Image (cartoon, rainbow, N blue to C red; front, side, top):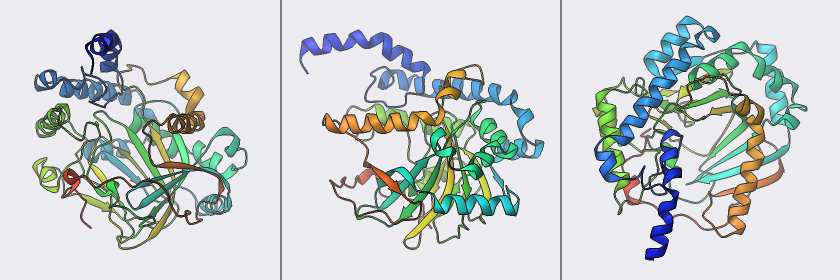
Length: 364
């Protein structure tokens, strides 16, 4: 790197400092976030601690949206399970509507798994009355808002996970991991039964809590990611089974559930996709909320206005990066497809297996 470039790069210092108070989690792009010296002094842990305190404050203002027993389950475990979310007739309408819908989708390959998402944008929802009714259901609205700590609509998609569907290394989602350094929300309304052998959602109950053991592990991970020689510099930390044991959480659970079960989780907690015994296609309604964790208020008019409209914009940015020759996720856009249609054969470069991920897989 030339001296001129090094000098000009420091003109970005105000942006790097501002990102301390955002959801930015990558260590390599920001030398302040990625400073080994600052993280040794606790920068990464301090950001997570402040974000967790603000999330707890926002949740207290949203407790009215959920039942007291659900608040208690979430505080203890980090997730809530709601079987039989919808009345049987309403669930059957939703299932038929989703299974027969055809629309534009994004497909992402991770290892040997392919995830297909059809976003529930305003235009798609006009054709999906049962999905519109689901999004208005008090339990769905309340839990996704309470767990995310933001009183805004989540981004929602019809999602299908095809396991062992493409050549490649093992699905990285089967490794124990946390999505970020701060509380985030993901939810799944399972439209089919998910058996033990089908790769169910797995979670370590209580791992969402900022205990001394968890903060010590987060600090160690931040120092590893801040090392200039490190290969993994992202903020979605992976954990070995031994490290999970050191957290002293409750025994990890494999959530094999019946159709019409809603699971809402804080994905700062340690979780994974269970390894499946063979090829499977898991159909679900998937929701996610990830706002700036340092906002003190729970509502966000700007976020509510954008919502699912951000998804096509994100697709456009991925296509632009690819045309410019920049690194992009292993994703493709399918103009029209049904949720359960098998994905077409995948072409393109395969990513190499990283040795540091070995031994971190979630065991069936």
